[in-house]
Each structure stands twice: as C-alpha cells, then as structure tokens.
Amino acid sequence: MELNIVLAEPQIPQNTGNIARTCAVTGARLHLIKPMGFSVDDKKLKHAGLDYWHFLDISYYDGFNDFFSKTVGEYFYFSTKALNTYCDIEYPDRCYIVFGREDRGLPEELLYNNKEKCVRIPMIDEVRSLNLSNSVAIGAYEVLRQWGFPDLQNKGQLTRYIWKSENNI
Image (cartoon, rainbow, N blue to C red):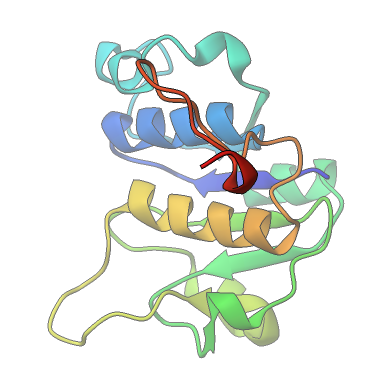
C-alpha cells in the first residue's frame, strides 16, 4: 500500500519538518508543491524532522500543473471549507491526501471542481483551524487505519518489563 502526502505551498518550516517525520514513521511519500516559504536546507525544517530525513521519499514540483502532470491516482483535498468528513471517505491504495498553505489553504477553484473529493476535519466554529502538521497526522492515520496499518508495528515493548499474554497472567 502506498500513501502520498502532498503539501501545497507550505510556508512554515517547522510544520513541514513535523510532517516529514510523520511520513518517515508511516512510510508515506512526501510531495512538496512550490513555491514554499522556506528553503529545503532551512535549519528549522531539519530540526523539526530530526534525524529522519534519510527515511523520506520526497518529490518537489513547480506548482500544481507540474504536480498533476507527474502523478497518477485519486486525490483527496483536506480543507476547512469542505462538505464531507475525512472519515466518511474510503481511501484507495496510492491515494494522495492534499493539504494547502497554512495561511489560506487550497485554491477554492480546485476545491469547487472536486467537491466529492474534498474533506474536512470537524472542529468548532470559533477557531480557524488545526495546525497543518496535526491535520496531516489525522488524515494519514485515518487512511492507514482503513488499510489495517500495513507494514507498521502494532505493538510495543516495555524497557524494564515483559508484557504477558492472556494465557500467561
């Protein structure tokens, strides 16, 4: 299974670094659509991603036209303006979950032309939106949950104790 996370014109390096870390721990591919509000060698970007950069599969695009001409799959657009809820969608293999700029989201024309593929994360009216990196994590883990968390470790191990099975209480 292949999950693709797309950031359209990200502006805050720390958000992109956090999202890169989410991609690294989930095996998702990261796609960055330019222009970006920082350079890829920004110290804040690298610091937020810590030492996970070598785990990333990352691609860069010179705008939406370049992105759409080089990718194939189903696209789902996360937006506070969407009518559908993100958990009401069935996400297919090789899908792209697309997120817009922190300060203005995705272009409204793109959303309008893809009404059924636009999804939102429910939140109260009095606040503008969640942080971009939190939204990406919510979206990514919903897709992965639907897929049964393929290739992800689903259990942990204590450092000083051993978990006992039900039969070995």
